[in-house]
Image: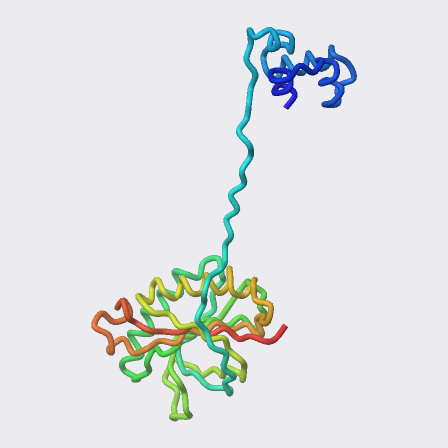
Amino acid sequence: MAGYEVLNTDEKIIDIAMKYGYNSPDSFTKAFKRFHGSTPKEVRDGGATIKDFASLKINLILKGGYTMEYKIEEKDSFKVIGLKMSFKYENAEHGVAKLWKKFFMKSGFHKINAKYAINIDTTMGCDVFDYIIGDDYNDQGKIPNDFEVIEIPKLTWAIFPCVGRASESIRNVNEKIFREWLPNSNDYEIAAGYNIELYSNPEDYKHGVEDEKYYCEVWIPIKKK
């Protein structure tokens, strides 16, 4: 700004120096030369140039403004029969994949469907969690070896639909829930350490769970803040 006034006005150099906080023309000249590469006198005499800057513009990128489709439902407690294992969060991916393989090897014989995949961390300590793959249990009798029954308590759930390839849609919806919807919700917060994925029957779709129209849901237990 001082350079602009030196170049474009007839104001005295000493007055410009004082205006911009310098105590003497000498200190102003030294600072001016360090910045512009020329002294104020050289600029005034027309033999030197000054540095100039375009005005600062700030581009503000707002994240959010998203639309998430969901419904709120209170559900009574229910039982699930399935295969369950415990995992540490940091190395769960490989173990969960192995559990799915084990489930499909055993479930066909016992006619137990993969209706649910449930993440259970009742302490919400983010260290170890239980993961169960299974079906509704309605006291059908003897429980097959390696299978067990768990009870999901009565809770209020935020239910989010996922449409598209399950490998993509479930991940995308979960990311939006925990990165956008929950942190920005003025009404709800997590009520308990459960995360449920509910699957449609893959046989109803031409390409199974990787069909572009495949439908499933993510359930998150919530309570009013």
